[in-house]
Image 1 (cartoon, rainbow over the protein chains, first blue to last red):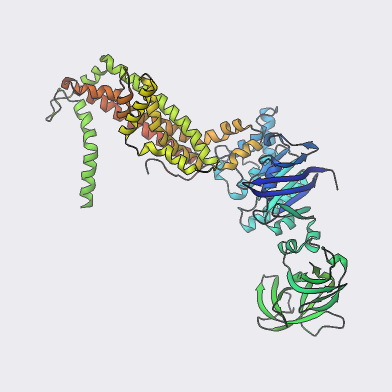
Image 2 (image 1 turned 90 degrees about the vertical axis):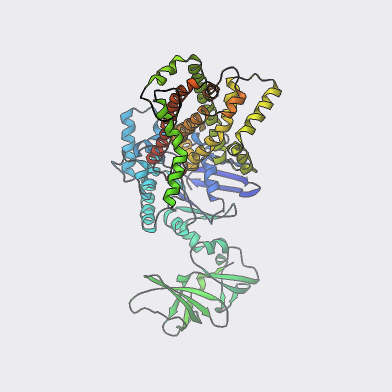
Length: 356
Length: 265
């Protein structure tokens, strides 16, 4: 890992007696696109505002770019922020909004207006300088907020749920652009989001937060394939859970039967006794013919079909249990499909089971 | 039926004010119909009455001081109300707004008692004090609206872009609430200018204009001059109130915000 540009050590923060951040430690590398992901109230925004300097932690230290930030006000930190509401200054036009942070710099007037135009072009708003702030659309407001923050060339750009006010199509466009922009400028981006899909798409690394603590820090692929806990597994992507009993390296799963497992499938270690098994929808499939020799399969009945266009999700109630697993199937021509109420055979991959 | 009712209501409300300019231009010392002729001599007599000029000056300086004081205090109260949550906030705000519904005579008498007990000399300053008190609820109501329309992240954004707290307030918050401030100043000025009861109780040797006018009612010969002055005052009040509303609406439009509150729907 490259040199950490943000170092958080044992950060503790209370709000009216309620714990917002609980002895939290985290390193964020220079040039990284880092996401703080978690449900609302998990402390992710508080953490971002602590880095920005808008919240003071009760305990712990924060180091930015090698310098301790204790007693350093928000306006003196090498960070800039894109607010959830964008906080565009309504009384200033676009150029004055973007150039706001430059007004005390030693640049000449023409250098400043060049920098503003350059920043606007970078976010695809070249020539918009004279527009009134309130005449902008949601996507344009976000671009102005980005340009306004990036023009100061911060060491770290903080983004507080910047996509939550946009409709789906626009959100997807802005996600692409934000990723491209981050690669182009090479600045460390820290994104707060409650949308796991957004975090997976955009980030180099993701910190999943629950209740003021970090549950796991990992790259998107690792987070998806090797969740550190059942709660992380449930929050990222879709996962079905089945009760099971473990003895040694052998596990007996309700509806699936017995199989051998290895240590790397159990983030909490293999302990004899009751356990829970998790499996992703794409690690199972519906079979059109009886299972071949050595293929693991379970029988059940389809209780729900959800159609997504390219994919369909089948909820299958496993025979002899009251549990359903969700199986995803690509909707290919001539591919396997099933109706609600139909009896089906579900094949599953033993190596993909996660044991919690 | 309803139309007739509304008409009666409007006549009842505004007929006396309409009579004011009519008699102000009537060439007779008797305030009665029929009118005898057109004259501007009552207006010409205004500046030739030194006590009257002095009372106008007193009233103007009191109105300016009281409206500035009330607006400054209202600014602080509205900002606290917008930015900080604390136990009993609603109760405190309720108490500050109380003078709005309290009978003015009660406010006047209790202020007088307190001031006399403290041994304070009654003068223009004591009137400023009383007028600040009754103007403040209006200032707070107007400025609460101005602050309520403001996104709290806007000031943080300015700080994030390098401003100190004070710079952020001056460069971002102040311009955005400026229409509210001007509106509050103008309304405070208007309220103070024609306020009688508190001024009557708390004034010292320098009467304010309404107090002076009241004293002049004993001399019927001067009544037309009072009418002329009243005409000017009504005109000034209307101009100021329209100005306040115009500034407020223009500010709303420029920042593209939804219109909320205000005095004329």
